[in-house]
Length: 424
Image 1 (cartoon, one colour):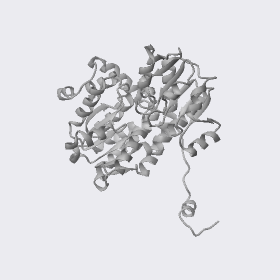
Image 2: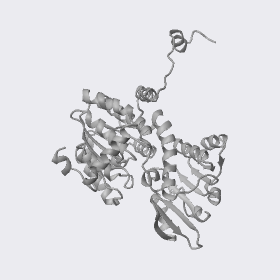
Image 3: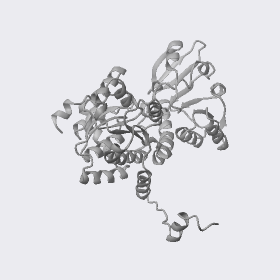
Image 4: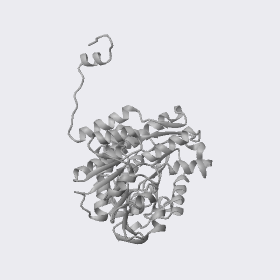
């Protein structure tokens, strides 16, 4: 590791590097697909001479993605996409054990957060990795001088894809961005199984509450919401879904969940989990109806789904009565419990998704980045899908690593599926 890497980084504590390396290597054991890709990248060097800026959760799983890109020859600068998700030991290890520039500190303030984003952009990247669109937004607002060097990028999360799609509709997005979030191997597994498990991991660490017998209200029934609802049901809870989309609401009801408005759900819920990507999902009219000791957690990307400002103004705050748990005492004496300051709870109060799930998402990221090196020049500005071949390759590699196999079509079956002449 060069001294220039250390000088081009801002982390909390270099002495945590050895501990961080152990945790990164532990995560690597559950990421066999990414390891295979890293071995190939080491030989082929697809990113030689390529600069990549990444704004992502600085976790052990992300560290293994960064190692994979670096093994392929990339010059990297990583910053955090959420102040509470940064693992300071992981950041230290990336800098001092693996020679990768990192700008991230746990619980940094808003000014520091954007200072780190700008520092990561100072390498004048060719490609960007984003998780929530803050880095891309910064490029298009305060760092427009860098836009001519940007060839393309990847977006990891639903919230980011929503924002990018809006930018594209407005004609504001100046380069192609690939929606890695929308691949089957990402939203079917990361969003569903990862979010479902890690959300309750965070709730348990923060509150040690018993879920069985409780009423859990899940706001949003996309892939993340489905995963949270499934885990809650499996833990013995009665699950209520709130939605704005009648098709998703009907799907929830057909799966056996109760469906109602948040106005009604607020009165009966014990645990509230928001996973919508929208703002003010839990707000004053809901707080005023909630039970004493109701628990609120957000598994959407940004800290806008729960109106924390209202709680701060109208409640007496008892900070950190437990790990990442703030209590707000309202005027009538009811106590509302907010986890991880309303930020992404699974990373604010726990460690995020299991590495085995992120193996899929980050394999998608790595292979899409390789594809972009060759194809970005042929793509128009806007939001693009990951090629199906990449998605299927990742699924096949993961399936094999787990001991599964699929059948192969016979020549007759191939012919039948690719011909209209056979009839019934």
